[in-house]
Length: 125
Picture 1 (cartoon, rainbow, N blue to C red):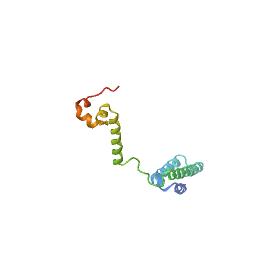
Picture 2 (cartoon, one colour):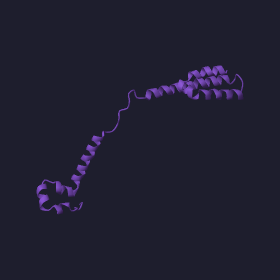
Picture 3 (cartoon, rainbow, N blue to C red):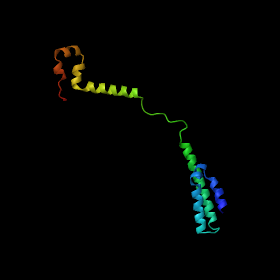
Picture 4 (cartoon, rainbow, N blue to C red):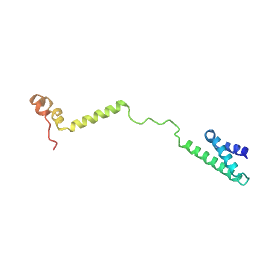
């Protein structure tokens, strides 16, 4: 019966056999030693065939789920990120009341007339 189990273990995928083959064989020997008899043989054979089928099916599903090509790198490059951050910072500065007075259309006049008044904080109403 041990030879039959060793042959049935060949139904499992090679990687699975390398990892768990010795454990499966040891489990079989323990079960066989506890309840020796040919009444247990069909149960063991059916269990091994069923488990091998499920493991092969699982391996097939894993192979189908894998992408055929390497995944595309997500995210922007460093330069793109810095450019987006700079644009965001300029938009936020444009919305700030104090910056509007400094960078508005009257920048030459405003900077010469009263630079200190333009730099004072404005209420956010």
